[in-house]
Image 1 (cartoon, rainbow, N blue to C red):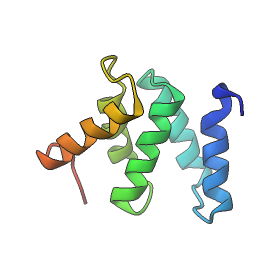
Image 2 (image 1 turned 90 degrees about the vertical axis):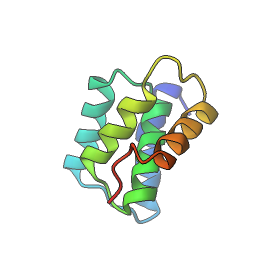
Image 3 (image 1 turned 90 degrees about the horizontal axis):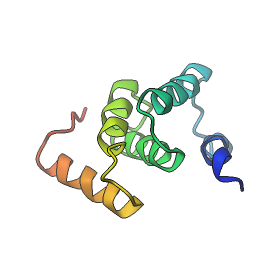
Length: 96
């Protein structure tokens, strides 16, 4: 799998597993990725976290997560997940 297509493959995998994102949701994911200047792996993590906590795609929650982990000091998946855990435990991330 090419790294520059990881997000597309991830979204396609969600579809095959039965999680049907609308075309609008997919466009918003790419819009968020570009506006936050986030890498594909950070965007994938933001989608995973959004679906895990919200049980559906919530654009505002996704953007909140993505902007949080798109910071340059977060350099690994472990750091991204730890940062989200810290933010959730301190109630800084809006949960439904």
